[in-house]
Amino acid sequence: MSTKVHEALAWASSFLAENGREGFAAEILMRHVLGDVNRTEMLMRLHDAMDEDAYAELKRAVARHADGEPVQYITGKEEFYGRTFLVNKEVLIPRPETEELVEHMLTLISNQFGVEEHVSVADIGTGSGAISISLALENERLNVYTVDIAEESIDVARWNADTLGAKVTFLHGDLLQPFIEQGKKLDVVVSNPPYIPDHEIAVLETIVKDREPMRALSGGEDGYVFYRRFMEELPLVLKEKAIVGFEVGAGQGETVADMLRETFPGAEVYVKEDISGKDRMVFALLGK
Image (cartoon, rainbow, N blue to C red):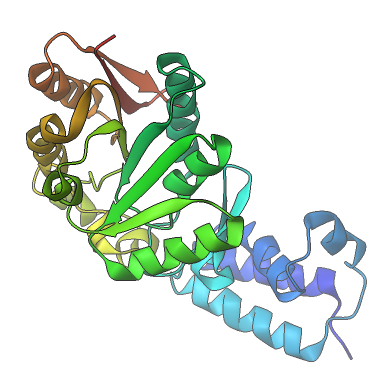
């Protein structure tokens, strides 16, 4: 007797819950194996019999997630700023909080620069390309560059840019070094760098620490190693009038803000909370 979609969904949800995973992941996996259908389409098919191959694929996907593999790596995608991005084990899974970094940066750019100006923006730490591609698509007058130390990440981001139709220049290198070497000056630098202290990585959920790329997580012994390097390199690449925007970890906002104030005396520096009320972003406006 064939299994109906709602029966398979109930099994998957229970199995995941028993294995310490969120039950709602079953719905995401079901939609994926049914052919990447939306939620409404899935609900309309709840009483349909499942194809045997699709049910077998669901069982494999559920087992992988129960074993600690992120849902996004199983489905190969994640939503960010209203668009679907390819993700795999070479890139950090884009988080909703980072959408707020993009949104506020777009507002600052509009406020700081005239509509006729072409603005050079560098996103440092490409990952899936979520930040750089979103900026390029939301404001077409931005000249967007993005840098990553891992060619594997750049490959993923380049695919996303091509698929989504974004004009982004990809550079392989370490932080701001490609711009320093070229003597290029920038209007905007934005980054969601690795910021988790090494001692905290040990207690992260296995679904994060054992599956997502460590190079995108570890911020060194105290979590600030990349921010310190930025303070050394930013003065070498920023124009007199410029914007800096960072994502930070919980409790890191004021420390990073103080670093920016020390590096750029006279700049307007502030910490911005995310929608959950956590200090999540730090911005510096230079040459106002």
